Image 1 (cartoon, rainbow, N blue to C red):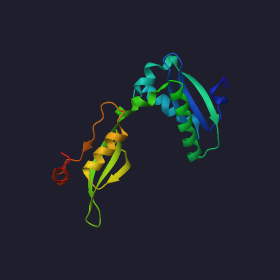
Image 2: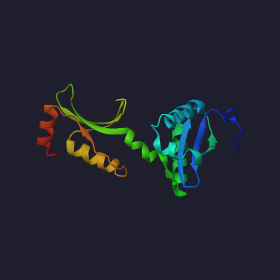
Image 3: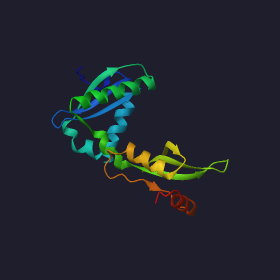
Image 4: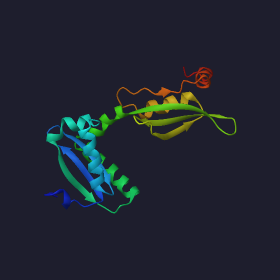
Length: 174
């Protein structure tokens, strides 16, 4: 599909910023493409998205498909298109986004008095997303290592309270 003007874009769907020269792609989905592209362009402009900024002259916008504004459907189709590009030999610009986040493992005492190790993804602006909960630090460490094995320079950040340090020592995770 050839787009002559940004205003010709359908609102809800899946899109790709495609770099055919270097075989890289940034697949995105949104129920409002104007907002999504606005945020992406702001990230390129304010240099928080370095990989895209460096290749901006090589990118072209491709409408992959339009679909209803249903999050589950959009996410499912996103995964499909990521697989399609991967099979074509494209690497993802999103692989570079890992440096914007850190993995944090926090020891938390539950209302019942038990302890659990919570794994969070934390943004530079300290927004947290709970990813997983484990009974032991060893389980949490193993899960992080397996889940983020392809992310360069990732090392979990542990809460440094006295409680957390002593629990990690007794569980054998240090």
